[in-house]
Image (cartoon, rainbow, N blue to C red; front, side, top):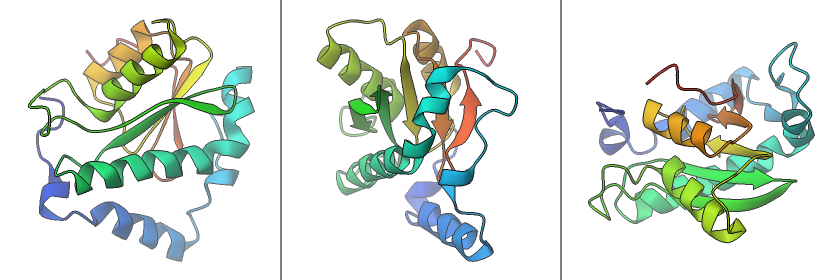
Length: 162
């Protein structure tokens, strides 16, 4: 199971509490977070000034998931500074164990772009993608993953966690 314990069902505002704590400590500035120290890939660097906007969009998807009675996760897919796919978690609402926010955002981007090849795209998610979602991002050729309120650079998706 990708997410064995759903703490958001017990404490729905835990995500906001953690973000508020980071803000009060002065560590909540996504615009100044390093993006993969020593990495020279252009696509991730091009997205840096927009990290805050895209993580906020993923957080909006997370809010929508909670509002709809689902698990508290959200994700967006970005290409050339534009959101091309977005989704809240739909696991509960659709009774589909594969309908994680990241999977749904990949599906949305593929539909909108008319291709399964999402090269030059970056995924922003409210939490670290599970092994299934990271593998899907790998097979969709997504360039890079960012997750959490601080837009932590998860690097290029891989199959290592499967």
